[in-house]
Image (cartoon, rainbow, N blue to C red; front, side, top):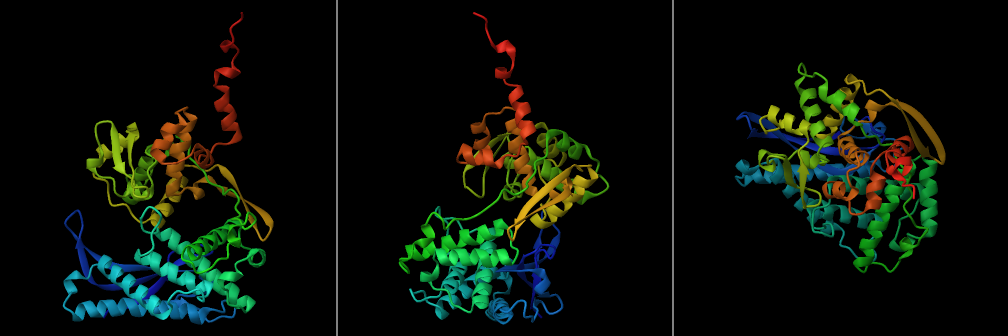
Amino acid sequence: MAKVRFYLKDSAKNETAIFARLSYNYYETNNNGNKEFKQLKYSTGETIPPKFWDKKNHCVRETSEFPTYPEFNQRLNDISNAILNVYRKMINDGQGDELTPETLRNKVNELLNKENKAVKPISNKTGFVDFIKIIIAESTTGERTTENGTRIKPRTLLSYGTTLNTLTAYETKKKLKLKFSDITMEFYNKFKKYLNDKNRAVNTIGGHIKNIKVFMKIANDRGLTENKEYQKRDFKKIDEETQTIYLDETELLKIYNKDFSNDRKLETVRDIFIIGCYTGLRFSDLRQLRKEHFSENTITITTEKTGEPVVIPLHWTVREIFKKYEYTLPHVISNQKFNEYLKTIGDKSEINDDVIISETRGGMRFDTTVKKHTLISVHTARRSFATNMFLNDIPTLSIMKITGHRTEKTFLKYIKITPEENANKLLKHPFFSQSHLKVV
């Protein structure tokens, strides 16, 4: 009997996404000809601090610390009912052979979008939070897309859901119902103070403000409000530079040379990570690399995010790894698991320098010292590629042709070099050498 269960994506985080899982009898044949059991994994668009999650009952705990738990659990219940209704209808209609996870997901999205529209048609009287729910529903089904026509990314949808939950909690705390006309500088200042009082990080607050500005722009574009205070200079997204790392060529060589032959999972993750470090490809593109993307000296691939083709020179390590796998990479595991294994790989490869992490929460600055390997993630590969290329005096525009950065300003913000590394790079320039001068 099919049953829907809800689970947290990452209970180790301060706030994490909630997914629904439907288990049913469906199998797919993998590349090796073996049958693999598949499940529908459905993003609810909701996020929650794990401390409020009831693992036993797969829902939000009843607690005064999370006053909107009844509405939150009702939204989860609506999603569960939608999944089961779609599943049962397809079975009753004799469409059991078509019950792929992708087909189910699409039909559930269609159903939930129709229900949202039927219950809450948009007008200038629609509450701001209700409007956000509709935008999330449209974005989930693909009815609302980006400016270039691509679907809204899952990470963006999760961000929208987090802002929705935060604004819902804000309404409950302040005992009000936000209207479009309420999104003013006064709201901006009160909302920031509310989040600061809850000890939220600067970048978390900035993310919510960014989303609020997005939602208000959509409302303006649709003629639902004439309120444009969100465009004021002071109504700005706040942020602070996050502590990100790159791995230099010595560290990458240590990882590349480390023997993981006794652990197949670590070995394959290490190999795919190294490919990322010397191609600059995003995780989504690493997952689609195939033999046909390779020529004798280059990789040519159309990137998933931009839809633009890139041609990447073949680094010797990438060539060796693809030869090892006869140009057919093993299945790439989920982003979350990949990042977990990378930290283990970094630890075993002795990437153990101390790194100071600085973060502002509630107006207070906090410093924490961690080992470098704990900060390694799949995105470290792309950042390492760009930084190492830059340090090796490869022209910025040539690197940007591969990374896809539109401006040199954004690219220079992206790479990670210390002041010492910058000084050492400059010292190699002829300007700092007496030999470049000619005595007249």
